[in-house]
Length: 500
Image (cartoon, rainbow, N blue to C red; front, side, top):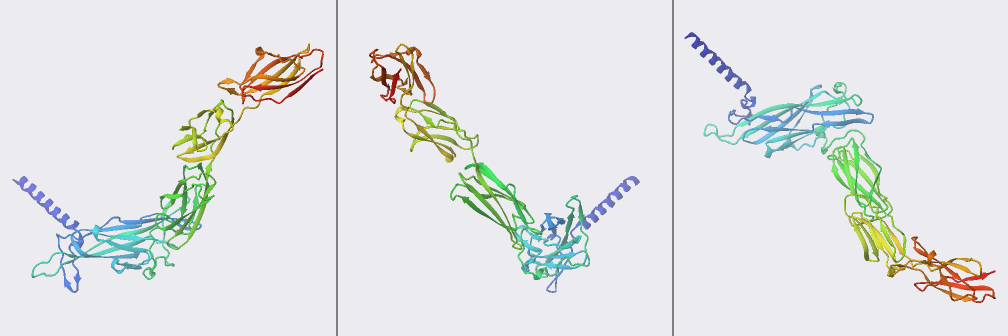
């Protein structure tokens, strides 16, 4: 029996301790009442009006540099949520300098335009947002304490005894910390306050200045990652602009000034990515000439400006491989030498506006000139994404040279050997000398030495022939004139022969 009673007492003691713990963890604000127009109001357990800060502290990391101070990281805002179903919520924020005990109070409904702090109420989210912006710091204190007081009115009326709505009050707090960072060692140290200087401005509410949404300390500067961007014509390029002492995404006006040379060369540029400390600029490379890009940044807070510039140049691609001169019947394999890149690659051989041959993907073009092409000029062009790349090349279709008499030699016994050349092809056969036109003391009957005939694949191709000639009258001097005539009926220059 005694054992049973002892166990029951232990259970009762734990139950009492549990009730006590519940009392201690209940929000303090639920028990407090305040006066509204000298009317006493009472707490309401069911309403449970409490404040819940998103963060317990906001930290600002600062590096000291020769040109001033630079903020490397900052928690710039804190959201204070409230619980319960209330209306007419009013917030009051008091910022206290812990080293000097000075303070300043902010209320959103006063429409303050403060230099360092501001408060925005967001009823739809049942919250208020606190912002701080530490600019131009000369001395640093360890901690600032932000105390938050909020009042709210209930939406219920309590009969004849309490016909008025009840007003409730809740409080919370958080801190602002400024942390100095050693630029060399990276160590972090809370800055020590200086009692001889007033770092925390008490007149901030008297300075009607719009709060910037970004941060920057000291002289701003910007620089391009590379001063010269080289890329294939009409292809995409990118360059990064780095910035210090300015928040590009929040506290800066950015302007791009483009200077194409010459005008309308196809070059473009625009901001494709915007971050607090850098921007990425992308565009299309000009087809020719150059594109100058100047970036101007103006800090909204104080109007300080910085500029940088770079140029975009079209990268030269390899010259195509082709024969500049072709003859009728001659074939050539044209290699466009286009780079293996993304996009549509195309090569075109044109006669005026008429396309004679083409290829895609950088493949070579095999072209055979026709006899009717004699004397024509064809254009070879390369395209990337339907944009002309590089220059336009010209291919000339030449007429075959006239036949030539290249040598005349004395074979002895009043016999002369004449050597000729005939160029090109005709109807898929080699052109050759088909007749010798003779005048003087020379026999009209001559011998074509077909066994010595030679063909050469030069540019143009030609056939070398040998002929034997004898005098018509052996008793007269062996003097005559000879002209070679080919299959096209073209005549060589005349040669006079005098055999001693």
